Length: 418
Image (cartoon, rainbow, N blue to C red; front, side, top):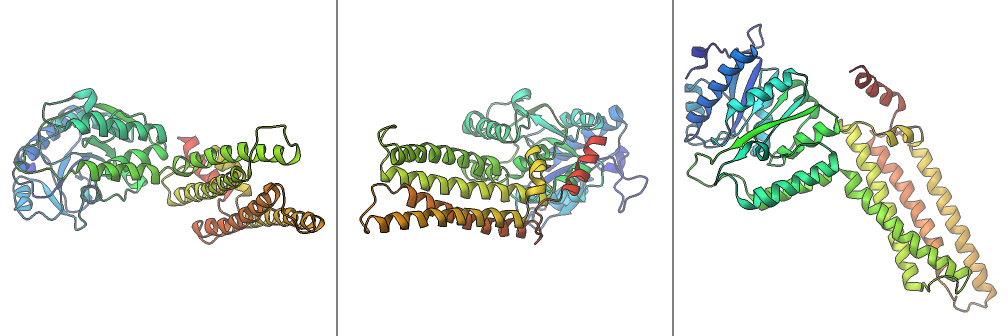
């Protein structure tokens, strides 16, 4: 099954004969299923040449096989790309980096996917899409191909959360058969070494507003006589934590909103109770302290959300939002230090008033802790704001200006032209 027998070439360096399409398979001791998978991939390449007029190659991203998979893959006509870092994602990233084609089609080397279904995915890329996902829920899942907890709980739940957080619009975020342009692969800068790679590719493509398409794909029972590398609970958690790590708005912003809302209700009631006794339901000292604690949590989450958004912008896997464009002229270290200083001054003034009233009462206990709590809250908020400013200055590259409006304008120009 040598690729040369089918008219495909694997040049050592990029030339006029460089293939257009690269089929990438991650491999770790897959000698049992490799003949079927490479044969199926060759069939897909024949169809790609006949239907789309594109040449191709097969790359086996070997993750340290000890069963002779490398030699067999070479004998069958594939090119082996050794990947030292262990993990499903690491193998695919290494294989995609080694790919010479402008279009990359990836799928598992266990016989569970039909690479000929990837012809439609490459056609989608030719139409101008950046990423094309397979959907097993639209194409079909053979009996025994997917555990029930993955099919009815894990995949729908994780895909639903991913769509809620990132609005990717896909129905199966974890299908292993997918195609991406080499340019888009380089732009999204994938780093996930484990199974979370599947989510990361969709998330970062959505964050960068790449054009995502989806076609049906089928899933068959794998051809291995051993346990799969997938560990549902462990890998499910890795996917879930990645969803939150790449969404500071949901991880920090939503809790901040809830905390601020709780704080506003409790402290407003406490203020009415302090200055207009009997005009509102009774809010005692404990509820006042709880309101201050909720504000502290909300304020901290707000700073962390801004820091997370700033980091994702600087890392290049998120485009600026309208809010960030509006805030850009005001986001700098000096403005946060000034805001922090104002909060500290207001808090000190309130505590000064508390001291004056305490002296006037001949140092007798106060009837309400509202003013002491609010004064302390303002001072601690000012300290957090100032320190948060330095944190974001560090994230922005030790620059006092966190986001450069000119840089945002440059980022918007290519998108507008496209």
